Image 1 (cartoon, helix red, strand yellow):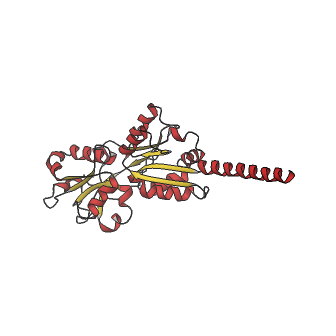
Image 2 (cartoon, one colour; image 1 turned 60 degrees about the vertical axis):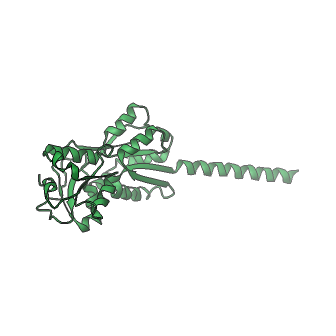
Length: 269
């Protein structure tokens, strides 16, 4: 009888330990939906964050801000949402689908990129070149960089003349692939992508003046489903630290409170 009690106690302790372990594992899981322009910056942020969270299971999915917005509205299991357009998380907050304030963490920049024209001669007006048969931009219907690309083209009265040449990427990363693979002769891309290989090695770019389009104000939130996820809260706090903001700046983003844009290319209208 005593031996049976000892075995029963041992089994109960094991069960409690297992439940504790499973609960800890659940709390240490994080799924992030991130705009495609964040690919390199977010990878660096995760690497830095893991220094203090080595056991955390973090999954980042990159794609279109607008697509993620719709998916979160329909119950997609994302814990943190990083959008290239702050309007999307602000709408989610109004709908009661967030568990944190909307954080304005960065400002993106648009560039014109191609393989043939040098940076000193390249500008948005280059889309009129007779040798340019296809122009790649992200889909303006759901991709913030595509919306701003359209605004810039319209601001220079170029949209109507080149609309028949446009090919649309599902997001800014797919748009870059169109340009890299020769499916487009020129592309309007994110500075945060062209600073890295293979785009940095295979072509040239120049910044598009910011006055030609609305700012690419980027925002993130912790979603309602992650309200009790401590790892999500820790990551929320980390992204706002000086070290994280420096990572964003190195990857081509301007900081909202920083007037020094650190522009690294010639700007042609």
